[in-house]
Amino acid sequence: MLLLAGGVARAERPKVLVLPVTGKAADAGFRERVAQALSEGLIAAGSEVVAQPSGAAAVPAEGCATLACLSAAARATGAALLLRASVEEEGRSYGFKLEMLDGQSGAVLAQRENRCEICTDAEALEIANAAASALKAQALKRPAPPGAGPTVTVAPGATPEGAAGVPAAPVPAVEASAPEAGSATSGGHSSTRTLLSWVGVGLGVAAIVAGSVLIHLNDRGTCTLTGMQQNCPNLYDTKSGGIGLIGAGLVIGVSGVWSLAF
Image 1 (cartoon, helix red, strand yellow):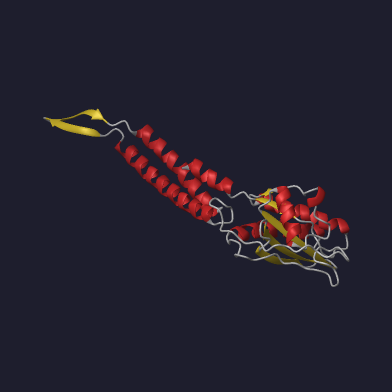
Image 2 (tube, helix red, strand yellow):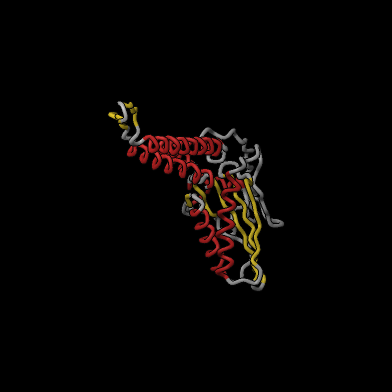
């Protein structure tokens, strides 16, 4: 049971690519530190953060604005999810906007906005770290809407590909396929993990009860009265087995509760 639960947990460890952080920040290096904080938050939430792609699939510093760009980055890194973030700095206040995108369709799976009012850079980075962890959990609870496309922002007068004067090649419509069995965003793993967790809790409780009964029966047996003397030739030696069952029950039960909680 514990091995099965562990397999489900590993299957929910998606690969995530953190796109270059955009937005207005007084310190150009601050955006890079935000990207690092986002990566650390995703890792703490059980995700595998992949390295930035290189070559033709490299993501520009201003971020991805087209489905073609997002898809190329996802294919090059094997990322199932893409985290797109922007940060706005006003004095000592920071505003974060985060979006978790599906790596295949570019659909927005989850989004959130956080602010840090009158705070230090370190405090702002802590906000970004926690927001990334929460966004990952939020994204995996909801599958991508069929046929949804990415949120694209194009500057006035620019082509969709961002190259001035060069018309963008038409992007074929991406038909969202049904989530495969075992997909991290299909929700199947979540329901299976919940079922296995409850089974583990039930088995743990049953083992503890059985172990308590065995300990209670220790040194007892079938006794007969011979005159005024009591004869108990067969005594149960069940203490060791009872302790073992209780120990195993505690391990299985706690594992089930931990799996439900996290």
